[in-house]
Structure formats: structure tokens, C-alpha cells
Image 1: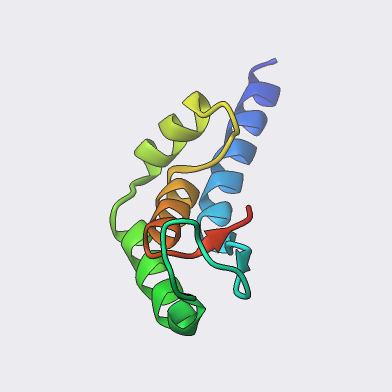
Image 2: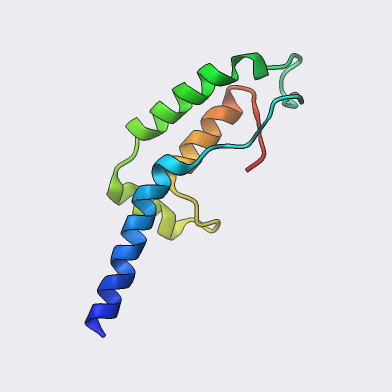
Length: 95
């Protein structure tokens, strides 16, 4: 019994660690966000790099796990920060 609990726990930890860097937001580059009058997709490469680095700099393993456990959508804190950053920069993030 203890072995199976440890295995599940290690699997969850490993999954969270690998999912931190594997998230890539799906952004609608042709459309406009409802809050902006012009297309912001021309700055998408720069925004993706900045948001990815910002998300990496502002999480820890423990905060990511606790956020994931409390999240109703089972998303990590990394994904949440990344997505919010892209949305706040005017991009239409689909996932």
C-alpha cells in the first residue's frame, strides 16, 4: 500500500515538473481582443518570450503543486500566469 501511494505521489510530482515547461498557449493571431482597437499579433513572439520567462520566474515547485491541487480546472500556476500575461498584453488566448 505504501509503495503505491509513493508511486502516485512521485508520478504527480514528475507530471507537474514536466508540464511547467510544456505549456504553449494557443493564440488567435487573426482576431482582436475585445479591449483593443488594433491587432496585437504583430508582437506575439516577443510577448510569448516575456510571458514564459515571467511565469518561470514567479513560481516554485511547492506553489505550483498547491495551486494545481486547489484549481478547479487542474491547471498549474505556471499556466495561469502565462495565460493571464498573454491576455493582458492583448492577445486572444484560446486554451
